[in-house]
Image (spheres, rainbow, N blue to C red):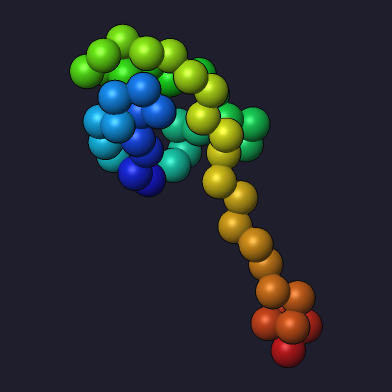
Length: 51
């Protein structure tokens, strides 16, 4: 998963599993800014599931 620091816009690649189901607090390695990153939840198309 690609994340971007909301303070300095530095980009980082992290494994999606690190966020867990609820998300987690992160700290930018470039500027030291801390923020909460919500988890990404994939949407499921019920038509595909029921087909």
